[in-house]
Amino acid sequence: MLSQDREVYFGLRDIKWRNRPWDGVRMLLSYFVLAVGALVFLLPFFWMIGTSLKEQAEVYTFPPTFMPKSFRWQNFPEGWNHENTMFPQWTVNTLLITFGVMGGVLLTSSLCAYGFARLNFPGRDFWFMIVLASVMLPGPVTLIPLYIGYQRIGWLDTFKPLIIPAWFGGGAFNIFLLRQFFRGIPIELEEAAIVDGASRFRIWWQIFLPLSKPALATIAVFTFQGVWNDFYGPLIFLTSRSKYTLALGINAFKGLYNTQIPLMMAMSWLMVIPMIIVFFFAQKLMIRGVVLSGIKA
Image (cartoon, rainbow, N blue to C red; front, side):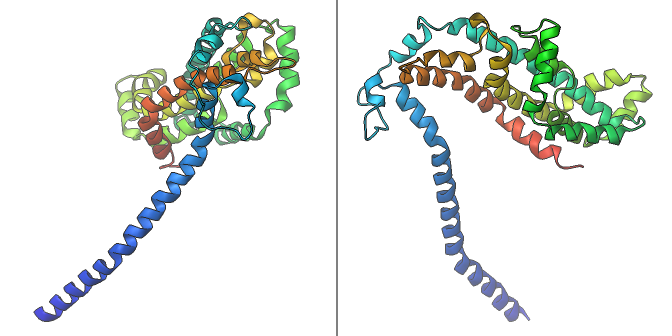
């Protein structure tokens, strides 16, 4: 019996030994495919950095050069202080709109999600389906009614159309993500708080929000990226040059007969840096929030 066990053991060990080289090959192929895919996605980013350091004439050379022949670091201060731009003011405008929208989205979407996850009221599932159905509504469909409405109440050429709507729900995707996360929080915590006399608002503020940091970080990163890069909204609702955002102001380098591409790429590179920093510090919470939000339906 012992000899049979030894034969079985050594046989399994031989099988494992035979499979190890193939496991290593599969792992190397997986890393190779991932590296190639990452390089393909990062190629435009590296091209932007290289173009931001080129001379204006070198941009139009053929065949094109990936790296500049001489690094022209002056493109960054020249672009920032260009006579046709107001980048300090545009940066302040972009930060004001971004953090105004983020505050509204995080607060109102978490309130709506808490209601759909924990409160029992007539038609709850029906209204939740209506909220999800709004995701399928294209933005251009509502553009004309919104523009006419904002014009009649005097909101055009102000930041109100870009900030205030975020304080009324925060978006269907954000509500759905937080609702899924809230449903995974043990109901015993809520019941204990109710027994202690806590109100629904206090339960949401002191229990659900602190426990939902991963999901909130995910929504914060997505919202920051969307608002920071938003070109469509400011283009429609803002007309004064002093109220432009960075995404809209970068087009100031486009002329009727010439486009200053190196300066445009330099400012685009500076515009990308805050998003990289935000994602770098929030990536762990962000990934955790996406994973945990799908555990319980």
